Image (cartoon, rainbow, N blue to C red):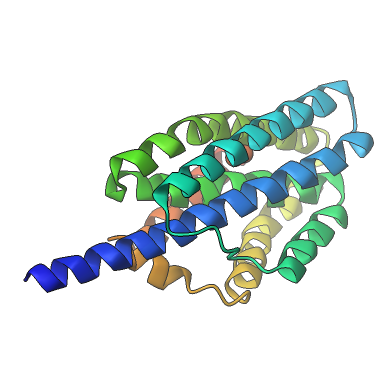
Length: 220
Ligand SMILES: [Fe+2]
Ligand SMILES: [Fe+2]
C-alpha cells in the first residue's frame, strides 16, 4: 500500500514537472509569436493588445520557471528545439484571421482550459504557480474573441458562414499536429490523476462554447 502510494507520488511529480515545463515552453513561444506579430498587426489597438500579452507571457515564464526550480523534477525541455521552431514558423505564416483562430481559440482558450482542469488535481505550490497565469489567459482569450468578431462583422453573410464552418476543422488539424509531436499527453494527464476521456469531453464542450461566443450575436 505504502509502496503503491510512493510510486503514484513519484509518477505524479514526474508528470506534473513535465506538464509545467510544457506549459512554460508554450507560454514562451506565445510570447515570441505575439512579439513578432506586433509589427504587422492591423491597428494600434491590436498592437497594444499583443504588446500587453507579450508582457504577461514573459511574466508567466518567470513565475513558472521559478516554481519548476523549487518543484525539483528538472527543467528538461519537453518540446525539442526543431519543434519550437516549427511552431513559430507556423504562426509566422498565418494571416491575421488565422492567427486569431490558432492563437486565441486553440492555444489560449483550449490550451488554458486543459491547464485549468489540472488545478484541482495539483499540489498547493503548483496551484499557486498557475493562479496569475490562468487569470491573465482570460484577458488574452477575450482579446482574441473580440478581434475575431470585429473581422466577422466586416464579412458578407456568406463569407462569414463559410469562415465559421471552417473553424472546427482548423482546430482539429492543429490538435492533430500537436499530438503528432510525440508527447504522450494522455499519459501525463493520467499520471497526475486526470481522467483523460473526461478531459477531452470537457475540451469539446469548451470549444463549442467558444465558437458560440464568436458567432452567436452575429447571427442575430
Ligand atoms: Fe500565459
Ligand atoms: Fe496567454
